[in-house]
Image (cartoon, rainbow, N blue to C red; front, top):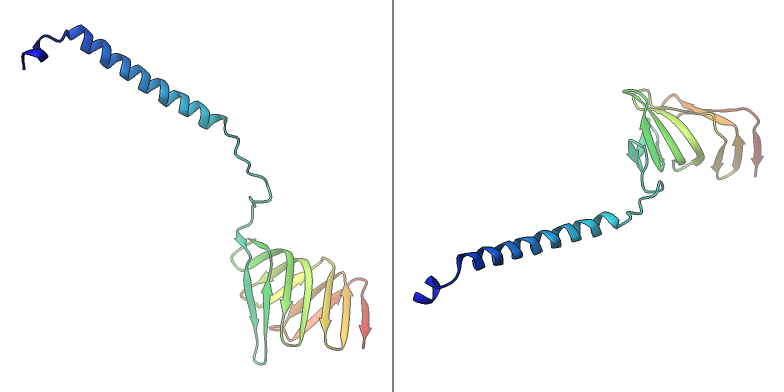
Length: 149
């Protein structure tokens, strides 16, 4: 016990101050190294889409048309802009295009981008289309090429 009474108070203060300075230097050194790390975040990972990989369905009495896309943005309460690899698929046909405006409440879809309609006996390439009447009717726009088998 008497040994601890003989320890110089100045020596304890200097030792504590040295440990504190070393600790602060270590923290600042680690912080500087973290700031030097270059985070590689490219635009292909970040998107301004509201929905990624959306899936919707147009329902009617006899069939369902499934809709998938890579991304989508809300235009208003009912309309959604589907972008990139938009595919309409049912048991009877499929349509592939790049941009579609899908109306959820009216169960309609419109596109002004080139599209490809495929079914068992026909192939239609057009400049756009309009699906209405709950998927019972499809109108193709612009220059169209029809191949019947």
